[in-house]
Image (cartoon, rainbow, N blue to C red):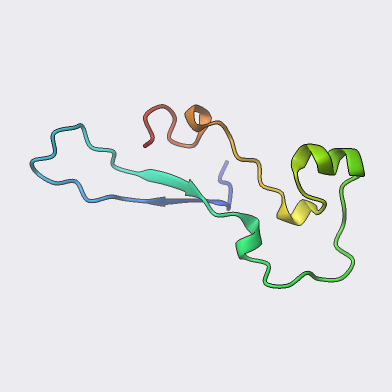
Length: 77
């Protein structure tokens, strides 16, 4: 499953790097980067759910996984 909030990039791997290369690195782009203003009548979480998720609006919610369970798994840099 592809999540549209995830982006990848390929760092330069030098010929004399002492460590094994990480070919692809992943990062999350927060959804607030795509909403330049607050549209009217956005759906809202209930107050209890908003406190758990950290935002009132589902459009601004992003589930940031633990580092080891991220796209690339262990050792993702």
